Length: 271
Image (spheres, rainbow, N blue to C red):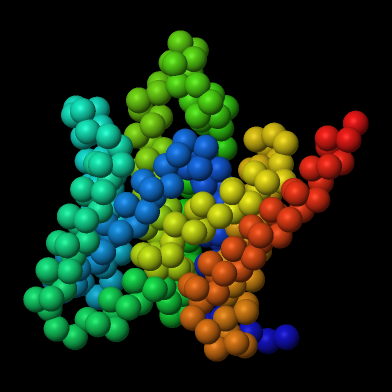
C-alpha cells in the first residue's frame, strides 16, 4: 500500500513522539506532574504569539524557549515562596495564555496558524519536523535511559536519593527541561489543548496492567506508539482531525486496559 508523502511524514512523526511521550509520562504521572505538563503546553501559546510578532514563519524556537522559561519560573517560585504548586502553575498558565491572546489580538492574518497550534495539524509536518522528532526521541530517550535508576529512586523517595548521592536538584531541573522540550515539540502532533493526553494516558493505561516499573515503561512505550500511530492512521480515511483522533484512540486504549485489569483482579485475589 502506497502512502501519500504527507501521510508518511505524519505517521513517522507520531511513531517517534508517541513512545517518547509515553516514556517520560511514566515519571510525570508518578511524580504527580500532569498539571505541570499542561501548564507548559498552554504557556507555549505565548511563545507562538511572540514568534509571529517577531515575523518568524516557524515559531518553534520561541515556543520552546518560552515554555522553558515558564518551567524554570515554576521551579524557582516553588523553591523561594510559600505558594502551593497548583497555585503557582495556575498563575503562570493563566498569565501566559492571557499574554499570548493579547499579542495575537494585535496581529492580523494568523488565525489559521493559531488553530494549527491550538488543535494540532500533524498532516502538515515537513521532513524537518520528522527529523526533529527523531532527534528528540534519540536524545531525550537516551538521557532518560542513562539516568533511569536515579530517576526511579528520586521519584520513589527524594530524601533517600539525596542521601544515596543522587544530585536531586540538578536532576529535577534536567527532567523538567526534557519534559518541557518533549511537550513543546509534540504540540504539532496534538495541539496545545490536547498534548497532555499523550503524556498522561499511556502511562496511566500501562499502570493498570503492569506489576513493576519496567513493565509500566515498556507498556507505556507500546501504548504511545499504538495511540499516536493508530490515531493518525484512522484520521485520514475518516476525514477527521488527527489530534482528537489520537486522544480518542488513547482513551479507548485506557478503557481497554481498565477492563482488562478488572477482569484479572478476581484471579489475583482467589489464591
